[in-house]
Image (cartoon, rainbow, N blue to C red; front, side, top):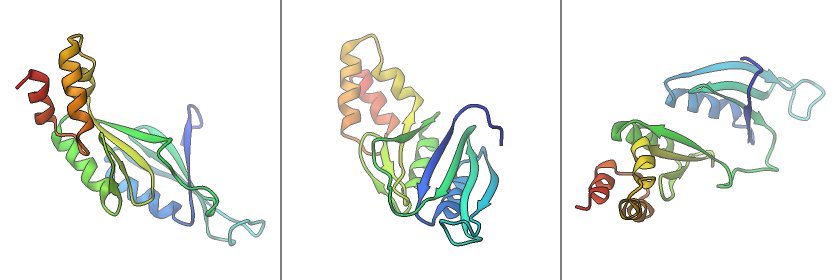
Length: 159
């Protein structure tokens, strides 16, 4: 993988390779990079996976088997911008397998990583110059876990 730009490092407790392959199976535009292993110098067991490089939709990641000291929380999440309901459903269903639905398009996957699955159209609706349309849509958004674009469109239109 190229070394320009930014790489997001995700800290796992022994699940780095498993998680990388899980994400690679979900995102169609993805690729696996190098896998680095611990040596006798440690701190992990020699030969075990230390880091896995991978890329999802052009975003570079490193999954690190760093141990149990740090865990994921909602302070950082990844947004997936979706063109339509089928795409929203696809990512939502795949990422909530073994995870949990949260609110407003957010979910936690089975590793505890937070994602927000966002229809591109929603950004347009809540940013509308008509404050009443934006208010109605925002209020409806707050009542949803997975976004329902058709329902949001109805509220936006005042139906």
